[in-house]
Image 1 (cartoon, one colour):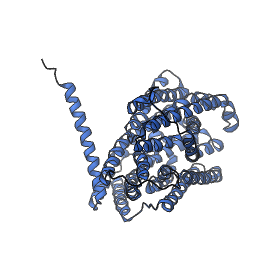
Image 2 (cartoon, helix red, strand yellow):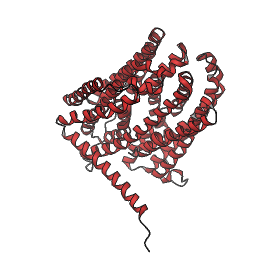
Image 3 (cartoon, helix red, strand yellow):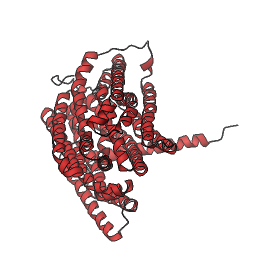
Image 4 (spheres, helix red, strand yellow):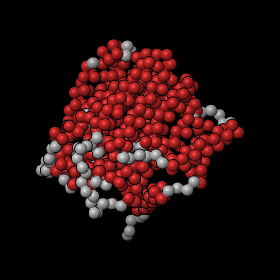
Amino acid sequence: MTAGEKPAASSPKEEGYNAHIGKIARGAGTSSVGQGVGRVLAFATQVILARMFGPAQVGFYVIGISVVQACSVLAVSGMDNVVVRYVARYRADGDAARVRGVILLVLGITFALSLALSVLVFAGAGWLADVVFQKPFLENIFRAFSVATPFFTLMTVTLYASQGFQTVKYVTYVEEVARPLINLALVGVFYLLGAQILGAVAAYALSMALGAGLALYYLRRLLPELTRRAAPAKYETREILISSGPIMVAKLTTYVNGWAMTWVLGAFVAAREVGIFNAAFRTAALSGLVLTAFSGIFAPMISDLYQRGSLDRLGLLYKDVSRWIFTGSLAVFLLTALLSKDVLAVFGPEFVVGWPVVIVVSLGQLFSASVGVTGKILMMTGNERRAMWSRVIATAITLAAGLALVPSYGLLGAATAAAAGLIAVNALTLFAVSRLLGFWPYNLLYLKPLSAGLLAAGASLAARWALQPSEGAAAILVLTPLFLVLFAAFSAAFRISDSDRQFLKASWSAMRRKTKGKTKAKGARAAPPKP
């Protein structure tokens, strides 16, 4: 369906609003747990690397990752979101042949492109290191990272294809748990073998290869006929390629927007500053965890509801989902702002100077959370070009601000430019969604989590002044549970809406079912065999 086409009429068997809330609650809950585990593992990996090698070596590592991920974005060519949209759409139509066809087509194209780009990076590693970044040691880093590109691309596209089946558990397990855990374990193994920072690069590449294998295994479980040659497959090549074009530009500019300051810092300052910025930026990025958790399960639902013509229901869901995202993100933002110096001290004393980066970038992340999944809505409703141009403009703003501010203001200039890009892209996509579909996230209900958060933050600051815990891990262990309890208590003091109550009820029910399921499984394994 293109942007100019009218959506089909609503189905009489369409699921109720509460059923959609329940599905979002279950999916977001699963994704949130996985995202939390994944962020903890990724964070732990960065802390360990910082402790092992220091900010300069970590800076080289981060620049290398930025290049290999750029190659993956180019190889995917926007087909990650396309495969979610069309798998969900063809499944809604009951067209199994086209479901299989779109998955095979996207996997084949992206894997071929990733191989070509991997060869180019390997061959051009010397030029990138000497001419672009003027850091000769990066040549070996780039060549080692180039091996990971095909596996990274294959894993990414395969996991996105699984999201088209309106499930996020495989994405959560592979991308957020299994692969980061494998990477962390391999980092330790290679360090013990004396491989230094190149060992960490090798660990990254091997974890991507294993992650790609797991992703393919789970996709085949969702679609057993995927590898059956006799199974029918219809390839809508032209439609897929046309749809992926604007999304590719949007994804590429989003990627550039996220990594631009790493490149600008790498060109103007020492690798040490890049390492400090990366630690601070990752800490600030924790505020985006909730948005990512909801977007994975909500994206195929957007496509499905739009295809059915349920725009009123989609608009209501968008408003509720945006408020839930903002509530969770606000808690994370306030916590990271309160503990910014303490968190960076965990990386090492030399990283603490990056605390203003945490505050500034987190503000941009919070605004992003407040508008919700506007980019996904545009992409899933045939308005890819709007999303593309929003990201192009925002990326131009980020680069221009970075080039103007970094030479004079260093880390703070890079943080300001990064936050400006986040605010710009979300303001532009929000305007587009409001104008095209009439959706708007904000209402007076936003004041409730905001009030609860400010009260909890104020009480936590007072407790810090009274208790005076040591900076670093001690302050984190004391103030984190205190703030979360206070935030929950103040939130409960305000009257919640019916949809909020339904969401919490569905989340609690899903948690209880999983707990009971695990208990029964353990009991079954522990039961003695019958004589």
